[in-house]
Image (tube, rainbow, N blue to C red; front, side, top):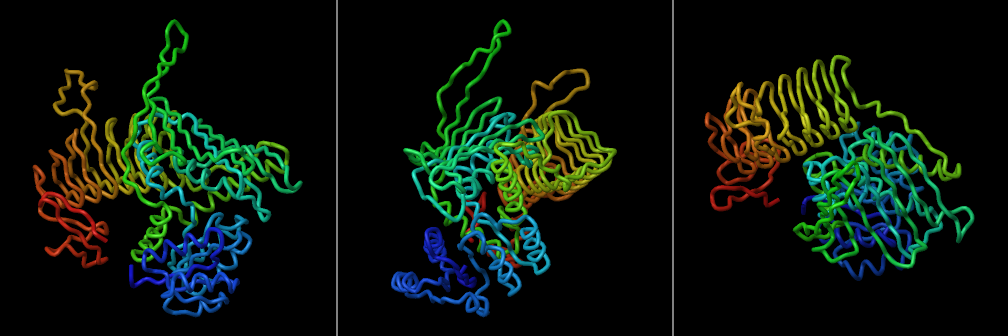
Length: 519
């Protein structure tokens, strides 16, 4: 990342953490703040980093590619707009802006200039939440019925914004990601105790088109700290408690409710600990911004995601102002379902997805955000398709198949779910599960025999037949498929030295049978 330089604008309560982490990446070149004493302290702490007081001095610097904005929310629009106009990539701390129209202007401006616009929804980069998101997307918890979050503490008490805008954006961002849809109804209530115009405690209720419900309880007048997200599925329940030691932050509860004589009987089970590699979420978020700048890829929390969170915040504020009235949000008009497509009951389709002619989505299937399902595609029942997947014409994604994010399925490629089918023998109870991991490409007319896992960013050539597990980044051809090389995340075939000639990403082989990315 040494070729990328960024400036942090605003180095107060949260800005100082951004300064520390961007310095850790080696990309921090400049700190901008109006407080001379603050700048003097940073100059002593980071002697290699330059400091300026005027924002114009940041924008005039041709050696600064990215601007990190950590100033009060009411300044975000003007500062971000100026930075984009100056050709800088922009990271903005939450919330993106305060006005939805202004958010739309920033999104369009970034797209027009080919620049990155990213919002600081920190918990999207927390390794524990990343794991929880994968568990939900894979169907491990079953159908998500209910989500609730508590973000409580004594302080930090603000006077420029209420508790809803201060604490709730992270929880809204996580809940929208887990559900894969925008709420249809929002209702919020709260209490003002320290200042008659500023809410210190709020509870926000969300109802989603799929039937999922959620609530968010936030307060800075609470006797102890609590940061907890609970996801209740019909198979398992998950608890993400960020105040616990790392090994206990994510627990799965395989509780069940069994019916006996028309009476629901709960059956409790021991919690399952989930092993998750430890890392600092803010550092991972900062690295993600730099990687997006380097590759020109869309951030996980881009301007559109920030706008979705902003819409829910504004709906919550409107409800709060109207003493708990129910605010109805417009239907997601960017989701397109062709009039000839057929969607069964209890199907979830994420924001921005498109279902084209004569396709059929069977019951209890979940399709993520920004997916494209071409003509004559069948998916389900009980299928999970991640965000950003592209499934081209004449593909059937059967029960037992799971696609993670950004999977490409070429025209007429084939999944199976029974290993040895016979027309006269019922074998639907013998399904073998197939997992296609993030970023994999399955070429036209290829066949994936059931019971196998396709590693992340693997590339299956046209017409190949996969009969065994495929390692990450593998380039596979033939019938049965065999590995003939490695492929970069960007899709370029890697040369012998394993440095991509397209994006300069570097890899190394491990045991001659697998590949991992270095940077």
